[in-house]
Amino acid sequence: MFLYTGKSRLAISAQFNSIGGFTDSASSCPIGWDLSFVQISVINCAATATNINTDSAEVGPESNDSVGSSLEAAAVEMESVSKAISDVQLDNIMENNLNGSQENSTGKNELSGFWKNANETMQKFDANKDQHLDFAEFSALCEALFVNNGKAYTIEEKTLRTIFKIFDQNSNGVLCMYEFTECYNAWIKKILNPVSAIVVIDVQNDFISGSLALKNSPAHQDGAEVVEPINRMLENVAFDKVFYSLDWHPTNHISFADNVNLRKLDKSSPIQDPNEAKEFDVVVFEGPPLMEQKLWPRHCVQKSWGAQLQDDLKVLPDGQMIYKGTNPDRDSYSALFDNAKTSSTDLVGLLSEFGITDVYVCGLAADFCVGKFMSVETCHNVLFIVKKNKNLTLVLLTLTGFTGKDALDLGYRTIFVEDATRGITMEGINATHENLIENHAILVQTDEVKDMVSGVDRRPELGLKLALEIEKKRLQNGKTEKN
Ligand SMILES: [Ca+2]
Ligand SMILES: [Ca+2]
Image (cartoon, rainbow, N blue to C red; front, top):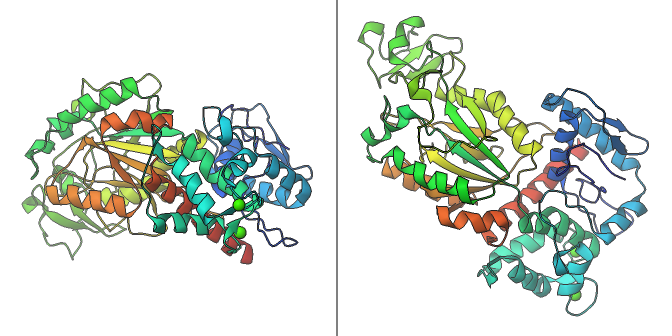
């Protein structure tokens, strides 16, 4: 059985061997499903307006023009798919699992050799030929999986045990074929064959040489310096998708100091007379909602020179612009929220539509509000943009659009391209780096990116991140089923 989306790469010829939340009660071995895979697929289904036949569990394409339909629609479709799956004959699913998926669900390259399918991989690493992978056998697999141009990375045993435990769903100390099939489909395949997007953040005139030039901020970094490494990446690396984000404010934006008269100050505002308010002061607007607001110089006004991408930045013809801060009444924090619910929905949708597994982040400014956002468990932090500091905004765009019991949980593997970013304060930059690493993102240099995107440099940290996401989704799915 297949899901068709009419879009080649993502088309989820899903064979339902990687769909979340199903347990074979007749067997001691739970069958693993990769929810994210189907989520991505289902969004795509929704975007191409598929119809779902819940009896046959087949999804067919339908010519239509509703590309970009809402994510709620996707969630509804998701439910339909789930229902359809539960009617499917278990035997067929198992058979598909055992055969391994010949379809390349996410990646662009054909997998070959012993990585070709779950069965071949199992045979390769099942040293004692008992049709199970014990921890030692799994460790050997990881040694072959996590390499840089053939050279194995050293992986801590603790990390290996964490990953092994995630896939050993019945905790009997070995991976049976069913468990391993999930491991293969949801994890190994994506590691071998990542689908990569780069998000070039706010490389705009105002942040480089305009009203909020980075070089005037405490770290005195020159924003223009990101242009060369970013261009180098865009020229040499075959990203699956390229996004450019732009701060894009209307002239009456709440954050501009010279707009302070446009809105009423609240009684609680530390400055009561708007004529006394200056740039970088904090005021409180009456709202609703009540809004504490730092006042910034006018910057990145829609269609102005300051909002334009820096002249030398390479803009690929198929690169997509992501506009943010477009709501006049939202400050940066609310814009974050707002971004998360509206403008980031576009980005979420796009990342999903293209089956992105890995997000590379570069641009301005490198710092973001540490802890405040990244520590939020449910917030699958991904892209950060600009929000506040002494004299620059530092916004964090989080992909929080999907919440609730059937929430789509998009935990992308995130790669921060260190030499293609510049920040505001050294403290902020260092804290950002630490925070990224704690959250299983990695820092790399521009020249390392090509091999990672092509799948010849495969980092264990990102493998751990993906495994943790699989576990998180499984738990969420379990809760959903109980409710
Ligand atoms: Ca074995
Ligand atoms: Ca097991």
